Amino acid sequence: MSSAVRLDTEHATQNLARIIARLVQPGDCILLSGPLGAGKSVFARAFLRAVCQDEALEVPSPTYTLVQTYAAPMCGLSHFDLWRLSGPDELEELGWDEARDGIVLVEWPERLEDLTPKSALHLTLSVLPDGTRHGVVSGWSDRLTRYVLSEEL
Image 1 (tube, rainbow, N blue to C red):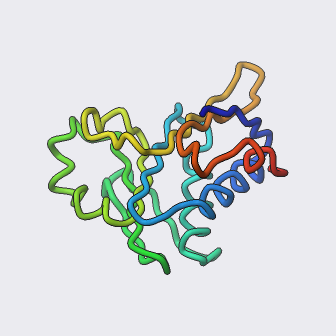
Image 2: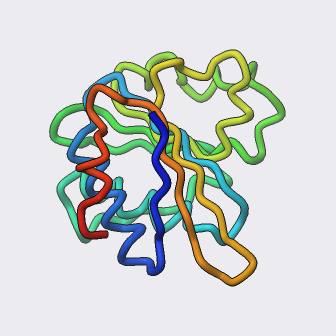
Image 3: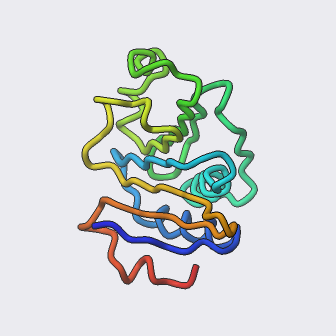
């Protein structure tokens, strides 16, 4: 299943992140794609704060560290930024296999190549020429329904 959502404001992107955070379970992977400025950081920050149940949580970008880990109430949570990764071979050093026991959020997931989990939720953010932001959500058809995505963003 694939659904498009309009994300007119940062608030809408944050609300989408909170909706998805309510659905995650240990072992889940969320793949976050899109160009610079599309809202990946806004989504990631809101998602991590929601899963960790801490709206004041400090959420640094993992661009240089490549991975940031968090202790969420339900399990460990890892935020990977693979922009600087040359390929999936480097993921072992970052603790990818161990992180998969918890929840992982991955920016620039195309670098995963063959390690891309088949059961992952894919969120692709884009900015149209008129400046409107959109998201396309695919996967998790057993959990993610059109009803959930039609909630007020």
